[in-house]
Length: 188
Image (cartoon, rainbow, N blue to C red; front, top):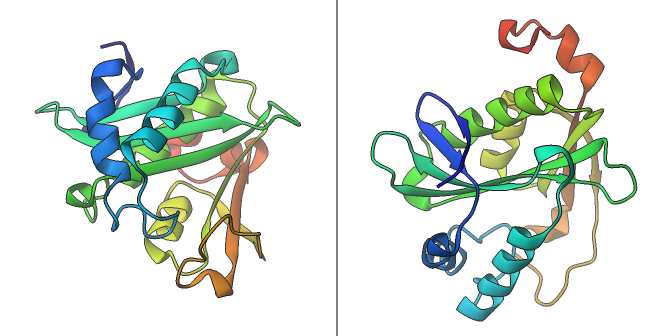
């Protein structure tokens, strides 16, 4: 297990084939997939997992498995995905098991990744998107320092999700905003 990042309660590791059953269980949970898509089949999750594992992320950015630091319990995953148009712009993503919700773990992991991205990489901007109605994810983005930028209406592949009529929201944080923040952890 190659450790990428450790926080007070989390360990983010480079994904390994042994993590696949946990990711399949996460992606097949209707509650965890509520604001994303219908639950995925094992084959769909396996294909996506293989793609994420084989993707050549630049500068040590990428996709990591999140586990509870004390017990090693699987909690989900986090991602900093570089834009194809501009690798200095990365998208923050996360998906946690419902058992991990409401404990501040998504915020803890996101804050640590945002700080690491700006401290150790040539990241110019971090973005994140979610459905307008996903209040929990929006709070995580705000706690990580990202600010609301816009509401937009994307085309849905397949069946629309309840709440999609309200659109999606985009949040972002620039390197300059991060450096100027009052958060002592964000000072270079």
